[in-house]
Length: 257
Image (cartoon, rainbow, N blue to C red; front, top):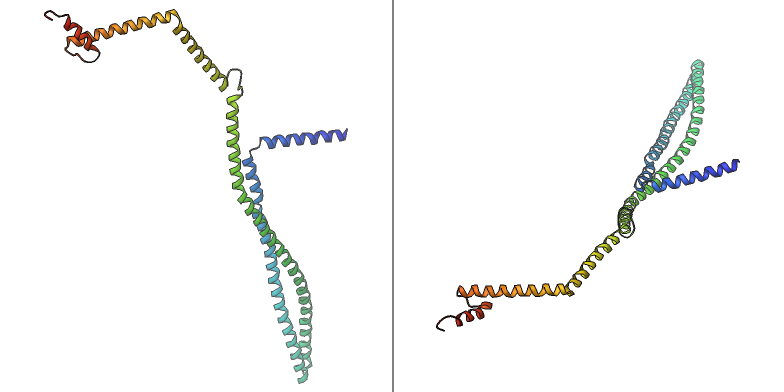
């Protein structure tokens, strides 16, 4: 039962993830990827802390070594002063200087141990600093490459969207959109069918007896109109063009001809 539930959970997780990837905006996902890559800033701050620790350890080591040199010089001076006092026979002074020299010696031992510890810390801090610098440089290189690819990916995404819109538009011209919306091909076929039918009916009417009679009547009306125009021109004394034969006929029929 437990295995079955785990298999169902993995299936649902995979299905949900696939559905999310399908619906998610690639441009937003790209920006998210760039934002994750911009963790370079946090890495740089962490590297700065590591380098600062190395610098601080280096300063502590230098300061401790300087103090060790001073204590060493003071111990030597106390020993010389103790020897001089003992040479003068001043045993009390010699004892005081000797005890001071012993205190300086104890301080020297503590400082020498501190110097050794600081040297180890400085070595470790230096190694960590080098690693941090290398990590920052490597991450900066990766970041620059991702930013350079970002514009290319955005351009490809825009081209893909444009191609998808064109494909959708072209598909809608040949596929049925819905029961109430005809396709482009259907509308074209309908228009061409009506045009062909109208041409056919016109040709049939032209070839029929009624069509021929209408043609004769039209020709007769045109002939009468031309004759009337010729008469009008003759009356106006214009005997050119189509009205000239009619003018001669009128002159020939006049009295005294």
